[in-house]
Image 1 (cartoon, rainbow, N blue to C red):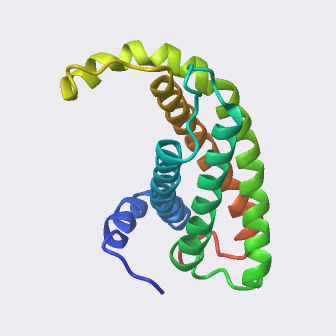
Image 2 (image 1 turned 120 degrees about the vertical axis):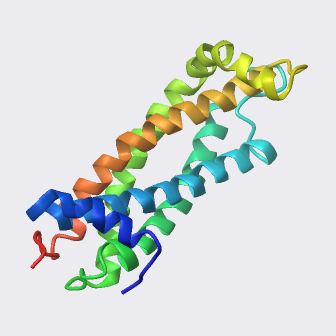
Length: 191
């Protein structure tokens, strides 16, 4: 069983929930793995949009296919990371199903989350960027006083905001769906 420096504080918080402590501990570990996965996810999107897949063309028109591809690649990288860490750390006691079967279930549940998230991001990134750029511009000017926003910047900010909302919604979906189907062989209570 993998031990990390986060085990003790997570177990201390979970212990406050009595007979639900093990489930709370799993959820907190799942959330930590999710934060790491979100870092992989966001980092991949930022890298791809800065190099190969700009969210807008030179005239400022949105390129939804680039956003779709970049967020999909990022999501796949995060799913692989999340499955690995959840199997090793969050659910080390879930072994009645083969790793292949668990990965298939995890991937299916993740795909359902990806589908909803990607549709949301593809539909929302442009208007979120237009809406939030004026709000975020004073903060950006603190760090870069001469900054003049472009349509590309609006697309990037819109993508990240839409992705953040999607990540939160999908985290809850993924935890409960995986708990019910992928890792349903672990015990509910601490004994």
